[in-house]
Length: 177
Ligand code: GDP
Image 1 (tube, rainbow, N blue to C red):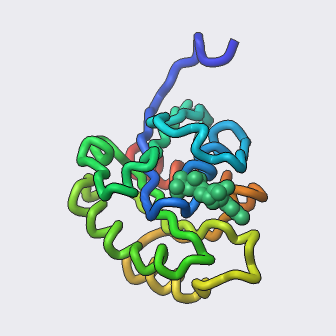
Image 2 (tube, rainbow, N blue to C red):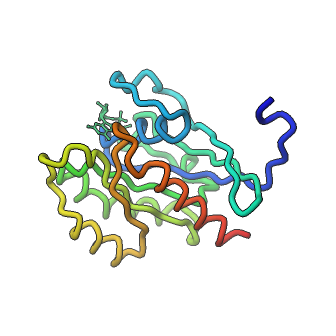
Image 3 (spheres, protein in one colour):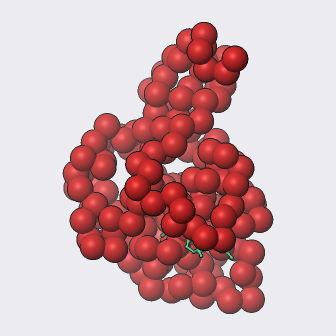
């Protein structure tokens, strides 16, 4: 069953970056396994998860990397970025500081990654609308200026998570194929 006899046409490495606690691990859990755990760090130490999907009749294995907490020590290494064809730049829309740090994360990313990498800005936790600290327009403006895709998501409520990953993977496919 499953993957055994499946021919994989492409493997796309996508990295998740952004401050600690913005929801990177939960976005990955939601996309890869359709799960959300309140005790989030049960998955600590897991480097990446994969999900195989079909784009334009090709089998694409998405290999999504999570920092597993490295960012707390500002120790995201160049090995983490190596070979990445996509990046999700994640902030918590209820924490202004996590958005203000996006420029720094983008600079680090651009310093380490391939110049053709596809980047998506993600404002996570949109289920907490009443606590919003980052207006959609601010993020849109930043994304436009820096040439990033942009989406607001909720890993908790599964809002836009699938769409965000599909959008970035489809764009990567479009560039690579
Ligand atoms: P990471 O450090 O960036 O990997 O963040 P985590 O995925 O560990 O999430 C940090 C905290 O935010 C945890 O308590 C999660 O349960 C919570 N969280 C993650 N995503 C969401 C979301 O979409 N909505 C809400 N309300 N909480 C979230």
